[in-house]
Amino acid sequence: MKNIYSTLLIIFVSITAFGQKSDIRDGDKFFAQAAYIDAADAYENVNDKSQEVLQNLGDSYFYTNQMQNAAEVYELLFLRHEGAVEPEYQFRYAHTLMAAGNYVKADELMNELTGENWDHEEFASELDTMVPHKFNYDQVMNNQSSSDFGIGFYGDRVAFASTRNQERPIYPWNKLPALDLYSAQMNEEGEMTDIVLFSDAINTDEHESSATFSQDGTVMFFDRTNEDRVKNENDERVAHISLYRAENVDGEWTNVEKLPFSSEEYSVEHPSLSADGSKLYFASDMPGGSGSFDIYVVDVNEDGTYGTPQNLGPGVNTAHRDQFPFISDEEVLYFTSDGHQGFGNLDIFRTEGDFSEVENLGGSINSGSDDFAFVIKESEEMGYFASNRRGTDNLYQFTREENEIIEAPTVTDETSGQDIIPIDGSKIYFDFDKATIKAESKPVLDSVVTYMNDYPNIKVKVESHADARGSDSYNMALSKRRAASTVDYLVEKGIDKGRLISEGYGESRPVNDCTEPTGCTNEQYAKNRRSVFVVSNRNGSMNENSDMDPEMDNEDMEDQEEN
Image (tube, rainbow, N blue to C red; front, side, top):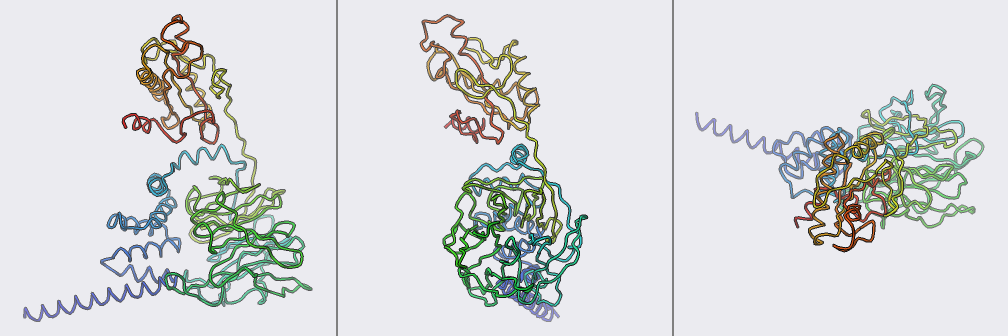
């Protein structure tokens, strides 16, 4: 009997092991085909998940917008294999946490990954005082299919991409039909009506999306997935995306042609035509970029030819996804990115001029999910964007209004030329060889507290000084104690320590000629025993006259002193 049980156990274990290997093989096959829903189903059946299985399972959930599931898998991945996981998984793990609103843990991961100071609470708060506009939005009605996005202006109508055509082949990535392009009328209630499928000249069994039109409506640019699959560097067959141009002749779209800088080896996608028709902006992962997808621009010549695509450079492009450009009629470029600091996953940004600096549009429109495909009529203060914040891609209509930014008032310090708090007696003074806050200084400090409460998005740098009596090293240490005691008083009164930075300068910055330990009166020396309150500008960086790193906090300074 024991032999029978042993034999049955061996058979059971063998069958189980065979099944596990089969699930892994199936998962790997589906993952290589970008069939992420099927891949996730197969990998979930694996009991003892290896590092590779966890990585692929997390990515399968990530790429299908199952962020909570992805976060749980990535967490397990890092618990079991920390130190052996590539940075790209930490990046995606951080974004899944942002999608769930766990910015504290996400900040930790991004700080470690980038070496930069990611502080979401501070970032979001400061952004509220910087962005030029606030947005009000509602979901577009009658776009409740499984996936609608890529809306654009089309004369007095709109054009958009959708998976609602059930006659198209099913896309294995998300188990939805291939995308087609539609046009529709938008009524005053924000509802799409008279929804019309573009003709077969435009729509095929492949994906079509992201249509952009000339001002007279006679020329369309759009993207389409290539029919042929080619092997990538991982020996996986993938279909890239190309850009196409079509002409409207006698009400019919015809003369559809692929743009010459499209390729079977990489993708070019998400076109946006400038108002005068002379420039076409698009996204691409062509060789020579910054990493994943970058934003490019190409000249559209009058003879129908094109210039050489130009990368917009490091002000816009990052090592991650920079996509969905839209150039407004005021030549403001809007685009989406998960490489610039944001609220999580794809956020919407703006840039103009030489495109050297970008600005997040803020928390009134961006979320922890993918927010993308933003278009706007600047003169009407309205437009559209897409988001998967409710689980699937949906269209949203918005209006925007000016963001009333109240600047914190400052005055210029006559000695240093710095912007300081405009209160009576904007300095406090210390007794000789002391760092104790004097009773007569407390009303001034209380005024600083009131000022910082009135303008909650500014920071203050406390700069403290000593007179010339004593050694340089002693006076430096004394001035730092004075700065610390000043900060401690403000914190005790309720000011967040994160809004305060302190530094001692010893005797190096006298306000008078008392630079020697003798030769001046006590009253003259006393003027140098002071703390001054320097105001940050409203975007959170310190006044440019400050010689201190704006991202160095008090603990950093203490660490430096100890080292």
